[in-house]
Length: 231
Ligand code: ADE
Image (cartoon, rainbow, N blue to C red; front, side, top):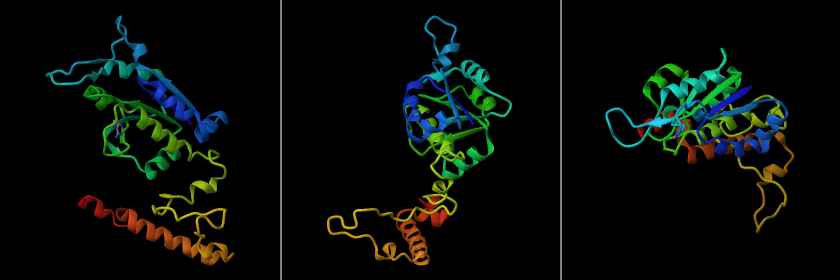
């Protein structure tokens, strides 16, 4: 997969994406991640990338022409061009799976401040993504979140392909069961007996129950999605 990030702040995501699993996935050639700063397309002396909004008001608006040029400079016929914005569709594990499975080239454009000229929004993007109902100072951290969630799903990115199957939100959209490891006693607490029983059928059953108990108490909206729309 190739990922192009279009951001005014390339350093914000360079660090996190260099580390750990995503760094390893790049080293192994599973993904190539490139950053492009739209500032490089600004022709004026101050390299201006934004301007005051028509009609007045606070904040600055990213200029459509520079975003167009930045996207055109990295895009390909197969690219999925995505804007990160709090107004986008909510990003979930299902979105990460869809992007990992269906696309070989992602172009992630990070908005900032008051946003972007609406004409760029209407013409450039295949989709808009929000990572949650809160406002970040710009979309670069949001883009790093999306890249992390997608790249770890690429075949070969995790230690074994198993690991992404048996985790929170995988397949059944339930939270994961509790895990324990050595030492056997910690401050007087022991792991549940069933996990030491060696009986795999019982262990599986216990884990499935725990997933339901945990999801019901922490995220009932995952079991009954209609709850979410009532809150
Ligand atoms: N930019 C600012 N806030 C954001 C959010 N919640 N999701 C995606 N991009 C953003």
